[in-house]
Image (cartoon, rainbow, N blue to C red; front, side):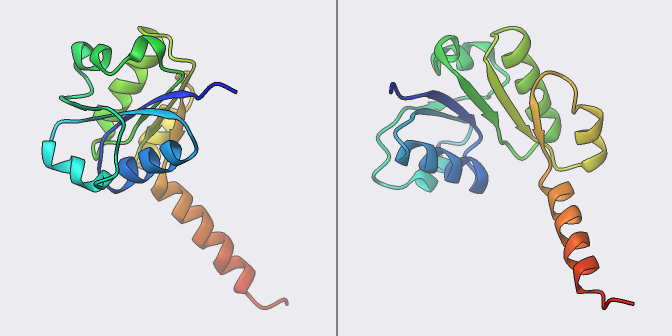
Amino acid sequence: MAPMNAIIVGCGRVGSALAQGLADDGWKVVVIERREDALTRLGEGWRHPFVLGHGMDSHVLERAGIADAEVLIAATDGDNTNLVIAQVATKRYRVPHVAARIQDPARAEAYGDRGFEVISPVRLAIDGLAAWARAARPAA
């Protein structure tokens, strides 16, 4: 089976862990990040491309190989940035599988039907903790 081509935009805790995990699984991974020092999060053994620039810049996306990307994950620390990147990847470049990390649960819900996956860590935490609390409640 041929390896999947993925672009991860953002190399913070989430983006770097995603990039490392996919690379370990045999994916071809390109990381886009505007801060060069973020490359250190990937570790000394990182052997995949790292594109320095802003993920909303079409030239940066093209240098990262968006034309061949099968997956793009927008995982920067900005909800608006991630939404724009995901919409551009979906609409302009027709990347088949696109996801955006959105912290604000209300914004995540509002953008949930735009043709890409929206992952809200805050919503996941709220739902998970509420389920845990309900399960801890003694039976009446």
